[in-house]
Image (cartoon, rainbow, N blue to C red; front, top):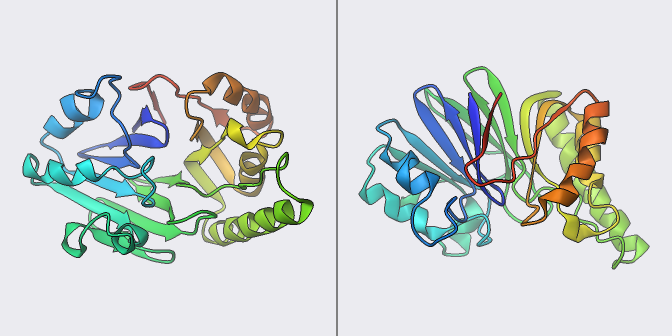
Length: 240
């Protein structure tokens, strides 16, 4: 199986016989047209699953709904807040919220919570357990917030993490935010994640255009026996 980085929190999981595109925002090309998704993925004859964890524009691009005009074996699985915020219509997708499950012959998707809006995704694909956090993270802004605000953010995050850990104690691949904008403790949520859940491969996301700073998490991850893979070039991939 292979993971391809698109941009920001957008990835493609390439499985045998189908692919899964998660949180598409922009394609790999820096110009407005073309890129891995448009020039390769959408032209493949195999089924394509398009997942969106929430309605924020850096995680959901309504352009994805136009793709069904050129590809008939495309399946949309969206967080229900996308429907609630009228970014899509009821007939456009299968909508899922925390605790919900989508399942067919190819894959199983369980929706877990977020500490922002929407959901996170736990997927079972061809024997592999794959997690995409969406905007689930310990979003505490230590340098700007009060101690009470920081503590409340952490409590909320650890609660969601406990729920996931009760479902699975290991993951083959996790895509998780490591966002330098958070300041001093920007790696804290990622540290708590791999401390709680045994993770084989950890791929950071949501770092915008600041990948060099995200390299700092590598020593901690590797000290826990985690393979740390930073994909920062659009279209870059890794096997797992």
